[in-house]
Image 1 (cartoon, one colour):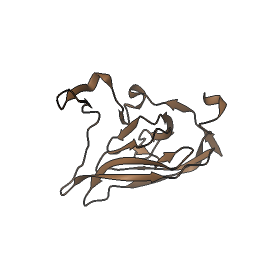
Image 2 (cartoon, one colour; image 1 turned 120 degrees about the horizontal axis):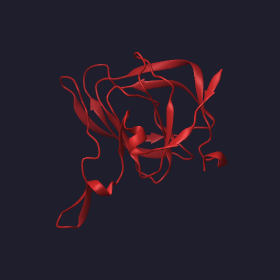
Image 3 (cartoon, one colour; image 1 turned 120 degrees about the vertical axis):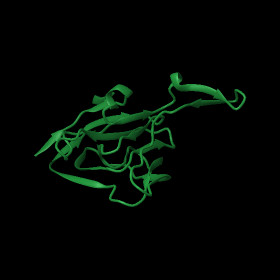
Length: 170
């Protein structure tokens, strides 16, 4: 048996229980470099716990998913946050779930435009990178260091994400 999921717009308010939305927020903008650069300041906080832990910057190249897509697993990082910021102006999906007794609950699906990133808080259940329509690259900031920073959970039943390009979602 599978359960259909709906796709929600990615907003700061809706995503707040899971982390931060990273986007050019006019409220955080300040001019620097003699007024030549707009800095959107402190859009998310990086969390890297544990002795010997550090913060690293990566590029992930995500292959597009085929829809409808069955979510059968989620993961979380107990020792650090993890952020994803797209390098191309392409929509992508963000799938998260609240913790329910050390396991993920029902997933929520957000559609991010190509100018929005997310920072998953430490220990937040999420699905691995979900590109839509084309190969997409992301700057990923996360923790490096000793300790097990990956937990996976496999659902007994699938949760199905409809095609985000379908007419019903427009």
